[in-house]
Length: 250
Length: 253
Image 1: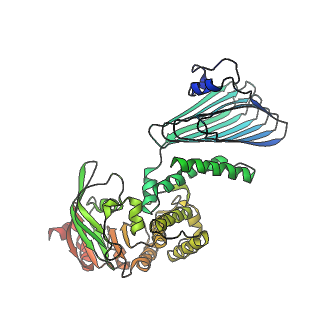
Image 2: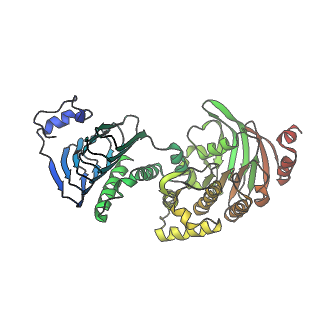
């Protein structure tokens, strides 16, 4: 991910990015490496709430050894460009779980780009991404799943949902499956929607202020993303930061 | 309480209400009956301010308290509720991920804020919710679940009445609150309406197809709505006459 040449739009992983913003900080710092030893379970999180004018790029290379498990939670909401990439390789019977929320407004570009390689048999991965985008913000999830020839019994799932608060906001969801084994389960689902107007009127009819109603609906939309955060104080930190960002969008 | 004068409206450019006039005083219960397509639900939604229900003419004055009359259509839907209007939905909306308690507490506190009253604490609110749920025979556990999700038709209608009890409006417009209810639920809901709303400073507009609910909630006035207008008004006996003879017969007479 930290190639020396400046990326171009022809590069799939940069297709929806803000390349001017990238240029301003090039070359970027090398990726953070995470190695999860065989049989271990680790939890990681990233709260990306950089200042509005910043360019925040976080790259991770994650190796999950046989029988190990890695849980990663991301709130990607800050910066002119906020980009998080995960390059994950799973060993035999390993598990990777990602819960990611993208919350943006203004003219922000926010992206989560994952490459999950099932290199050995019996590994599982589950990725849940929820994006909320207002004004002219762009939110992208690019998720590639590669299943090697001998990685039989792979079970890989992606669930991607985006909510647009304005017709001028953009959501991109791009699943990409590259499967060389023949006994695997790969599920992916992507939806892009708007706030439920019937629910908003129902809430208003009970006296709820429109901004409160919107925040309540959006909270429920991203509610599940941080459910599996093991450390309660981390979960609260992520949820509170998400809520603060939602309230600014309302 | 509510004075509707010559109200006309349109949905997608099609006229539905065609000069509807109706006056409701504090302490009164009115029933509106009418055939399918007469504009009954449209009247309820228009008064509630549902987007898409365009008012094309007429006036509606809402006076939740004597001498405090205001133009209903100058208020946004949530402001109408804070002023004391409650709309009971024929098809209550499901809101996954938002609990009934959260939904109601935010609603009530929004209303209180608009009226310059202090917010209820969590404890005070739970106490109130328990009392009103008990009144309508709705299990407290139901209130912890997401709004109307997985509720049966009857449970949704009970839930509407629990909401009405908690929000304590001055005027309730109840759109086919009796539809989908079995006999026992109908009795409970009827008793709930009487307990909550049968007071000298309250009023109710019941919209219904059938006379059945009116056995439990005795109306002071009954109106027949047909083709967008009130075509006949009378006392409780009019509902019985309609039930016996049908709309066509009564309207032809």
